[in-house]
Amino acid sequence: MTMTITPKVTQFASGLRFPEGPVAMPDGSVVLVEIERRTLSRVTPGGKIHVVATLGGGPNGAAMGPGGKIYVTNNGGLKFVDRPGKLFPIAQADDYKTGSIQIVDPETGKFETLYDSCDGRRLNGPNDLVFDRAGGFWFTDLGKTRDRDADRGIVYYAKADGSSIKEAIFPLERPNGIGLSPDERTLWVVETPTARVWSFTLSGPGEIESANGPYRGEKGRCVLGLGGYQMFDSLAIDAEGHIAVATLITGAVSDIWPDGSRVDQYALPDMMVTNVCFGGAGLRTAYATLSMGGTLVSFEWPRAGLPLHHLNR
Image (cartoon, rainbow, N blue to C red; front, top):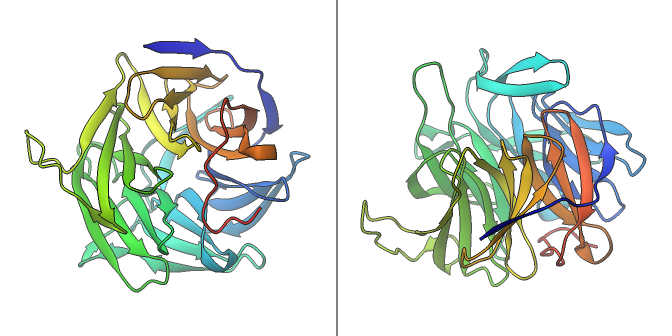
């Protein structure tokens, strides 16, 4: 069952250059990436935009990590089409070299590359990430799309101190959003073109308990697939374990029950809703990046968001 809800939407900021990866900060600001501008930026409650760091490539996702540093998944760069009020990516950037995981000091803007390869294979297009309580993080590598071919998607698990990185799931069809259930026993991953939600049971930090799926020995279970012309982007998990998934084409945040039995879609005024996070009093405010028009908006969420590791409130 799918229900469409039209929430009361407040515009938080405009003039952003394909925003993604929002992190609601304790001071009321929102840190996010601007993929086309190639920056990590901070938006104040008054809507002013301050560039924290110019990272190059294509900063795609962000999360607060240990020591007050911000970890960024950098896809390496995208080529954009810019029409009046409509900015959207079409392919790999002409100056693309590799994807990477970057660490940014939000106070100074200094940054460094933590990972750009795994077992001798370069990272193609890191997209979204989530930290666990053990000090590691999961991230998706959606890959890059070119004129005639595209990479196969991967999920990695890495240590925040740069000491190890490993391939955890392969292959997936352009995996994008990723999140952990409140008890951290389930890893949630969504695929962009299929609009599918996958769940993976975890036996420990960075360890997937294989489900040995019937088709190609899948490690996970497909919980839901949306019909029609819709695509999934990045996601957030709320305190009750619901998966809030930014949904492209439809232009919504999909509130998905953990068992896949129900989907409520919060309709927003942009067909490229790319990410969502929770903040505000009681973590009841959802902040969503509307990337085609370059705005950040907020609306009330029916439940509290899940508190994130390393983000003190």
